[in-house]
Length: 215
Image (cartoon, rainbow, N blue to C red):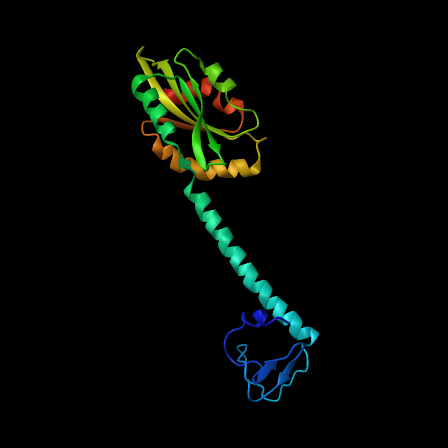
């Protein structure tokens, strides 16, 4: 058994007075090795490791490896919970939509290779809501903003900026989780959104629903 496996044990005496030869562990009162966290048993003398002791050492190795993997998973979950970084172009284009009305809508996507939310498509001011819905992929998640013009019951012309989180049922589970965990952080970057909508099906973001939420 390699000596390295024994280093996983706490530094108290489990098998006192041991030393390593090329192929065995033998008793020797002059070369003690402190192992384990159990009471000392001075009468133990091992000519070689028994199968049960070998299994015990392998179990300790498994526990140590599992602990490291668990810590890595916790770090990854913490990073996912904090959300993806947002490319500067996302905020710049949104400000142009809000202040200058250069665009009717903007579609954003998460680019996993660079771990950022980026602009995927810009809809010109002449484009319609049908053009916008046609820009949303059927089987992939997206974020989007839409500048919706409408007339109130008092016959006043108004507009509201919608933030739409598109997460179709047919998209990958990993993609749904990624977009869900990053939504709040990304949404906070878009100062000026007035209505938020989440949709998993085209019917959940129909024009009638948009009109109803705007009024």
